[in-house]
Length: 76
Image (cartoon, rainbow, N blue to C red; front, side, top):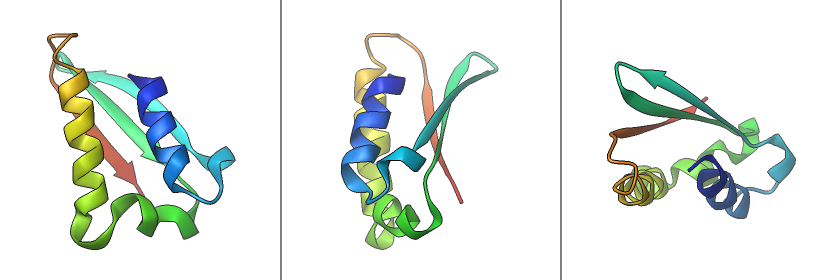
């Protein structure tokens, strides 16, 4: 899952080397925190949060195989 999120976010940003995806576990849920360069934050969130919601949807669909709840946070 981490590799999938890294691939998606690195495809969107201008500085792919600044992308960091951390996996945490909270109360049985998997939490993925995504950090990008400050100038790329708008690209990852998108207008009205559409890109961020799309990333979350893809992550939730991929998590069906894991049979766990997945939360994706984009850190600013």
